[in-house]
Length: 106
Image (cartoon, rainbow, N blue to C red; front, top):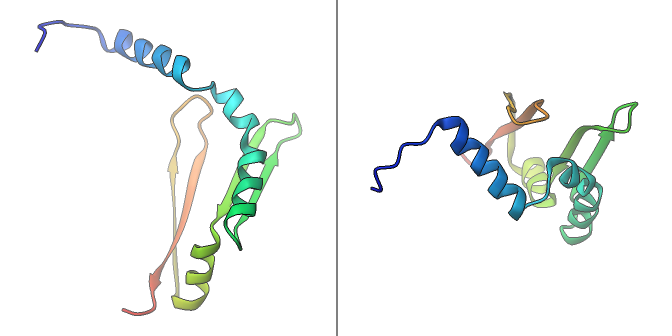
């Protein structure tokens, strides 16, 4: 539209700079995770959260299961549960695991 060509690396750098002005850094966000888990448990009945840190007191993993999801899972699932994971490619990497089950009404 504007006939401007920009290198991908410059565009990505500009995006990260803009996001840093708008949002907190990854490190600051990870510091808020205990509060995030606490608020979830207080505001959504039956919610379970667990935050684990490694021996250097750095973020290791965060588990979250919303209360409504747990209740539905217990009432309406078959015995087949599918577990999958995907690699996270941002600064800290890691893997995000997801567990799903078939709706018992089908």
